[in-house]
Image (cartoon, rainbow, N blue to C red):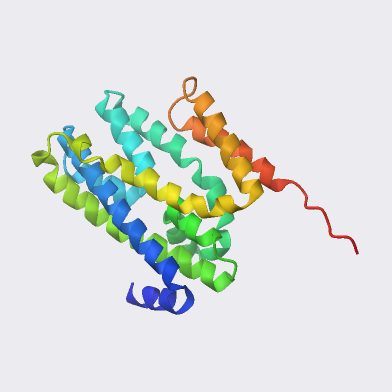
Length: 231
């Protein structure tokens, strides 16, 4: 971990490192909320901890636990998690080059593909910086998230109303902060607006998580061929 951060410090600018640190803090709050919600809902403390290590996907974990606590059973929880995690498939293609070579490195890297690690990676153009951003963000988030879940699970029995802390707002706020800089480009703004409209319209009719996947269709706006400059 120390050598990983040393490489990141050498290759990445101060702003990127600061943003990764802020994201880790925000996600730690969400992770603590997840652990507390799971345990206060009646699940054993070990379950959210194991789920966080094995799945490592905040939205999918919340969906799975929510489905189980609502009485849907393990099958409903797994299905809910799979639906939300389906968005990571195209994300994986976008950052495949940053994972490096070797089967074990790619296996571990695939486990660290999250919204945040992808967002920091695609902001980099240099291959070495892309790799540094991906691993620095992914590994740091993995450590911070799981430690926070453990803390939340241990304190879950003492917190009766986890919604009172408003920790659920930290995760979307972080994602919004990461997206805003990309909206300087016209194609990105058009895709974001269309995707948001599609997601809002589809929400009453589709299961949770599916509208977000449908909204990815707005990305076709960014695939329009560029006009070549006259010779």
